[in-house]
Image (cartoon, rainbow, N blue to C red):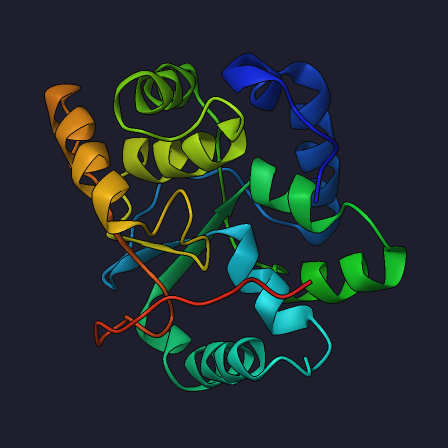
Amino acid sequence: MLDRIEGVEGVFDLELHMIGSAVRDRLGGLAVAPISMKPTIYLETSVVSYLASRPSRDLVVAAHQQITAEWWQDQRERYALFCSELVLAEASAGDAEAAARRLAFLERIPVLEATDEARQLAQKYIDDAGIPPSEPEDAAHVAIATVHGMAFLLTWNCAHIANAHIRVRIESVSRASGYEPPSICTPEELPEATACGKTPS
């Protein structure tokens, strides 16, 4: 949803931080360390896009929109949800009406800080875990969730995040760097493991 960002440094730069911070402050979210008795979830932007997008005529997309809406309605209270300034920046981009619908789902969700540790780990994911250099935002989402100790990363990005081959490499790089990675899954896979699908336009 953001204009093309070059490299991990671009994702973590001051301008993006300021965009996310401004939205965070407007929504009343706080950059806090997760302390919860519930399992923690990092909510990646694609999930919010499914929740907020208009009903699709594509049968696969429509099915995943329904799955996401049902998960949000029936399952989310079982978890402590978190997002990041990157999620807020992506959700606020593009058409103003669509952005407002996305941001409505992120109200009162605590915001995790994009730390220097996350920046360094994101670069390692690009260098060693198979996330393409053209997708630094994807590496950043995983790194932020990992550094902050999230139990799960919830996403519909099956190309570069919820990808079986890349997940194995993400886990290896994370542990070699001293972190326990989150379980990466779609709303369809939490709690049951099934297949991925398309992202709605």
